[in-house]
Image 1 (cartoon, rainbow, N blue to C red):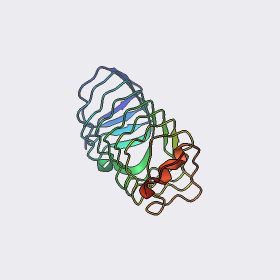
Image 2: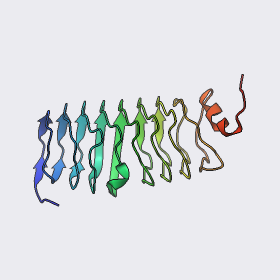
Image 3: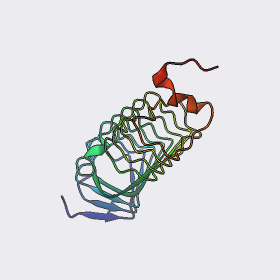
Image 4: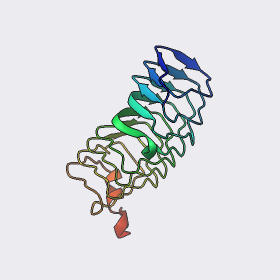
Length: 184
């Protein structure tokens, strides 16, 4: 990994970044296809397109993504040491968080169609007004996760840890999908 360190800069419409450390940086309207071997600390991505970007050994530490297009991202390739990020109004469809430590991660107003959360630790995570159509939850820790305003999800409580998870009507019907029952 490069030793380059960049601090307190704003990037606009950047399409390439050299591997390095970016601290307290803002990325506006940027398109990236490779963020591998980089460390992002206390940084913000706004209106960026990171769809299908390479994330090999990428570190996200206290990073915020706002209104970003993030289709098909393989987050499981990230470095999980001190991993911490949040997502607001992002499209994370077809992305994968396979076996990721995502405790208390906040997803707000996100579209997450067919996103894979298999084996992830989402304990205490918040899905605020998120569209989880065909999202995959299998052997996922959802203890104390908040799904009260989420919709479109279908998950099997016998295949996931759901103790103290919070749900509301009508979303809770997604817990019964495996039984193929008609409600209402």
